Length: 510
Ligand code: HEM
Image (cartoon, rainbow, N blue to C red; front, side, top):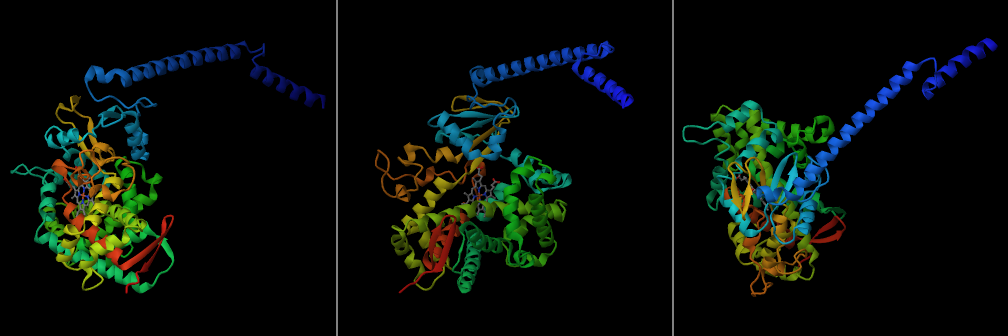
């Protein structure tokens, strides 16, 4: 025992002494610890000093840089270097709201993200100038830099898409003109609209035949009805016939967009990447067989021929075409869903709305002809006002540009390499154009005078479709499809809401 006590005692005491720094037999250990501590203090002090300097410079930069450079002033942020990047990714609408409170009215300002400024313009006149200055502030470089990451286009595909030919054109460069011409008012749009109406009627008939009386998610229901009809009209019946489970993956890819373009590794976003693999593989199979062309909108396969002529692989053709298809779906869906919710929530206005659309349903339950669509576009002011008000209040669209030549907008200097955005959120809430209570859903503001000068709000001030060189070329089809969809639902169904859920039953008519 003594031996043990002695040995254990000795061991213990020496260990304790070392840890307490009182082992007189080991002066070198104490010295080393003191030295380390000193080093820590020195390094710690150095880091704190550097941090203080960084924070100081950053604070001065935040407060005064616009005075030195004449750029739009910065919205204050807390974390140097990162700036507003995290909040912008997680909650960009919340950020715009906060900025709107900090800079009242439509004052231009700058956001900051990893050393880059994002100039934000919200005044109608400034936004028009941004749209007009398409040479100094183009849209194209953004598309070119994001497409590869978003849709997994190979480097070879990207090179071919950007390759400029003898006429100075490339696939990326002529995209806007291509889609603008394909979707302009005229015979192609008519064919697309008629095809959409046919599929929509089928979807509504099938839903009615199922006699579902349970509450369902309005969002899911609406996305499925509209998504199925517009996918079939654009791509023909083959895509959904061969991939009946495609649409849920399309919604996941939409949510994953921000992850893809920010290069978030697959391991942190498995569901989104798997969904993207699924849709791209479905599109690759679709574009591998010319027979799938049948019943599709001519523009999808005309573009395929142009891409093929550039030597682009089927996989990259699929990825590029998926982007065009996603644009078709992803903006119209939320608009249509919000429109239905707003229509069926205003029970006071339902009889007036139904009275307006009634002539379009003189010979049946469905909209199937262009004349009926025309009635909705031109003879239903309240329905149109609901549509404009939905676009005003619920569109979160943001026009993006990049500064490639130093220029001025609204008296501010914009420096090369930084970005410009024009979020519709603030533009759509300016009292001088939309009267008071701009956060309230009030379709009548587009019908009865709401402004001091006594005129109704102007739908042209609703900028949900962007503007300038990238003004949405799908806006005519969007009006045709969303208004036909909403009018048909209004005519055929009654909806009762319980939170996010809705009970949709066929409407009883005398
Ligand atoms: C309510 C529905 C829609 C809304 C709110 C909407 C909104 C927008 C916005 C804000 C832009 C960017 C404009 C800019 O940056 O200035 C855009 C671009 C585009 N939209 Fe739409 N859109 C809708 C429906 C559609 C539909 C149905 C299609 C196709 C049939 C479509 C095709 C396109 C295309 C191809 C572009 C890219 C234009 C370019 O590359 O220059 N959109 N859309």
